[in-house]
Image (cartoon, rainbow, N blue to C red; front, top):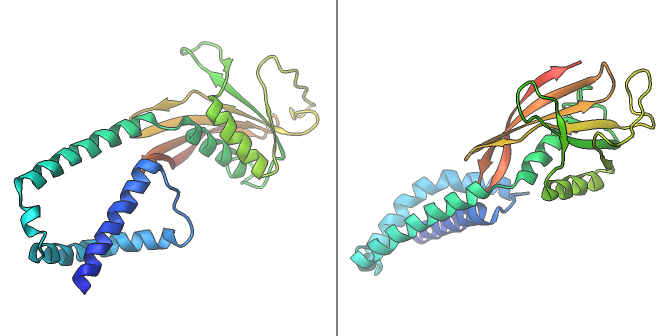
Length: 230
């Protein structure tokens, strides 16, 4: 009986792995505890599963040349498909992680500001020593950030250098709100990096560099580093 349970456990782990890799399933609730437990149990379960399979009627099938050729072909297909899926990436995830962090905990107020109005822009730096120019975020990123702000009761306003913002003597936006600006996004096969700056007032602003890594088809925060503060 225990061998059958071990075989079933391996099957569950395989299906879970495929779902996480190819369908970017979000792990929530009890599964956050269950999945690591399955990962820890699986190596031991493999011993029972292999023993069970070797003694079952599947033994001749598992040892056949046709099955071996199929396994190798399938493995190559999985590796190739995974590589393609990973290189696609979702820039919207990167921008959303940076945005949520810069207004929630990296706001120079120790995460206590909780702004209810945010002016959002993107700056592009074409060459060293050249002046910054305004750019636009990918539509998917705008949609993701809009949804995040809607869920958290934040008024989001996109702006560029032509937007007539007014500031008081402290450098605050007249009418309330803070400005958030993204720097240029750089991305490799497994890592991405983007700068996000928050401008609250002349002497209460700062910028943070966010580094993310790919994990099961999505982007996860790897580290954050304060780039500047005033």
